Image (cartoon, rainbow, N blue to C red; front, side, top):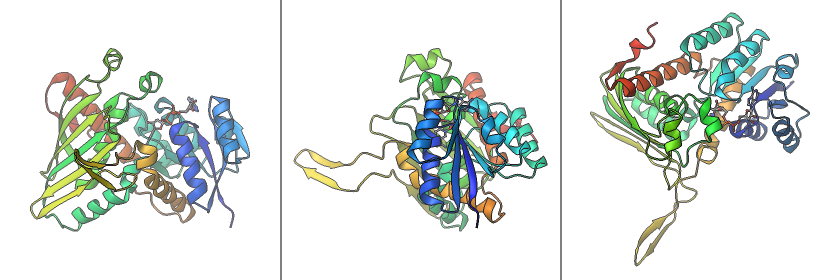
Length: 339
Ligand SMILES: NC(=O)c1ccc[n+]([C@@H]2O[C@H](COP(=O)([O-])OP(=O)(O)OC[C@H]3O[C@@H](n4cnc5c(N)ncnc54)[C@H](O)[C@@H]3O)[C@@H](O)[C@H]2O)c1
């Protein structure tokens, strides 16, 4: 059988991850093209994995009739445009989060995808982490009874570069967006209202650029559950990714993953390995499982589990959190998007 032919747009941090995971984990698919405005990045990635074609123009992928699917890994401000172009060229689309920072632009991109009858998957990779999948399934099975309190701790090891931040939409739409999606996914209910406080505690430059680096966000779910997300752009001990969900019949908890689970006991204390350092390590298996679902959904014409509407809702919740910080009040998601 002929392999699914894929073009990757954007050869930066996440473009490299997706290229490598497809090559290593999805034998039914083949990466045939890499495009990046920085030709050196495209060339380096293509040569590293012996990929035939590379270019500094994403149009070369869109116009290539051999290519069945594109993976959009370029900066956030390019996603919606590339989705529209790829959909019109009848290519299936995997797009990194967020789809865009503007809800109308997202709605339009989803509309064009539907009109052209192609698949769109949004890169909420944490849904594919085996630990989070397990607790989601157990919540669904009623193992903790009625969910009452969700707690998500999500702290990065270091803030991104100023160039990255400039087009990322800021912490809520770039980073917390994963936590908003996790909250909807694990509780299995929509978020009705958010109340957030945030500040700049790590780097003044982040504040000067109009962003925040530390936040606490409370969530109210439609099913009555409550949640809290705590974010920091800098945890000195590594990537801190923990989830706890408490309900009427018990509690479920996911701790950090470490490279090993040894413990060293000495006269001054007990020592263990630090958590895995960042997303490329912590979620490597999740990225593989995510991209496998995308490819298999195309090959077997199956539905995608995380699509355009999930991408849109996470952005709406992020905008509500921003507004909550600015106006120092709880904000209903319906104030932001009500369709
Ligand atoms: N799901 C995740 O875990 C995850 C992790 C990291 C990043 N992301 C998302 O992926 C996207 C890229 O992030 P990154 O960390 O890889 O960034 P990056 O800066 O490492 O890489 C972006 C690449 O895109 C290239 N580029 C810039 N403008 C372009 C254009 N117009 N067309 C094509 N290529 C262009 C750059 O040269 C660079 O090589 C962002 O939207 C980000 O939100 C998702």
